[in-house]
Length: 594
Image (tube, rainbow, N blue to C red; front, side):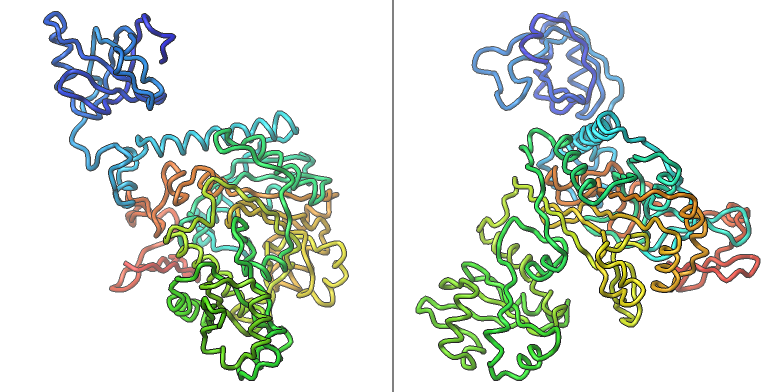
């Protein structure tokens, strides 16, 4: 309500946010806050008693007249700060007991407590804002895709079967002995089958499931804006997504400019040490191998003489970071040694390495890195992958500098970036002789590299593209393989997977499959960044904890042997493990600590 409503009689329902000495209270509803004046005259003593006795957070209904606030009592910080409602009648619809915490954003609460009483936490201004922002952006996305671009919103199954590769899947027992469903990691196969079915343009606000540990930007169940199109190329999908984000972007976050810049996977790793670079600040990784090529230090020579060996560095401005902690972090997390240099005000280098560097080499290093007085330089030597530790050091250094008050990353800036030309396959960490999909097994090879698929698959680029925002991957997609024989070769020969697990898809690809491609946007991550929330749990109504538990309902929970019986499984307990085994001796077990 605003000044235009002065003189109107209104009825309001909501929660009591504040109550002040029986004189007035602030009522909260889904639109905001309204000041309610409690009548003090004898004729309305019953109304006064009802509202005076009602505890904070009780649900009430009041009827009264909208009036202007007296001169000097208007509150410009409240949207309703020019008016108040003088109450005539009041009713307590439900009284509130003492709550475990106050519903005020400035009250500090542990995340565990917030999640245990999520229905109370949802009343906070910030959670209300985040969820309403999410709803508004999703609605705009639906409008853009369906009304402006002819997409069809299709729901795909949640109960599916195990698929090869990718993340671990949740297993769901069925009533058929020894047979289990799996919850899908994404609707990947279904959306490809929809293209084969001739739907041409599909999208879905899709629920996805991965049985993996939680992180601030990951949940075991999450939501994607899932998109697939027939007869499209990579550039077409990128243009669509840029338009989608521009159309749905909230006005209060300022406009976003398209087209988004693009960077190759190789360039991202070389300059930022990651495939999801935060481009809001500099501190790029610089190759300084040429400076060190003739330096007589054993491990440096060993590094630069290897086929993929390099020496790389980053320059941390204004120094004074705890570089010893950074070096220890590199050692503990990446098993990689990192060296440091400091440029003193007299332009001499302070470092264990300085005695091995000539004046000319020191000068070359200073110029290459644009080092200023008191800057700290971190160096890593080894094969290309070993130097990627500097990407992590770059982010940790930025955090340390910002803790000191130096603003490197504008919190109001949104830097989008397409990362393209990923490799189609990567060597497995546990067995480098074997390959795994860099994206997923359905990704098509780059047209220029297709011939390498049958001779040198490790060298192929893919038609895979990621969308990065402020250093977080918010979307990933690819042009798909639409040829059945090529798909079978990738599964069977390159990835060593059983193609029979995907026989339905391989059969469908033989039935006139059109060229197609798509992308999935991580809705939770996107909204988290737009809202400026510290965790995706702050933009999900009912999230899971870091360990994947629902602290409010205590799920997952035990079920009785009688409830398990229709699924032909039993729970055998011992001191250390719970294992699930089939009554019919089928070799299947799940283990979890008790």
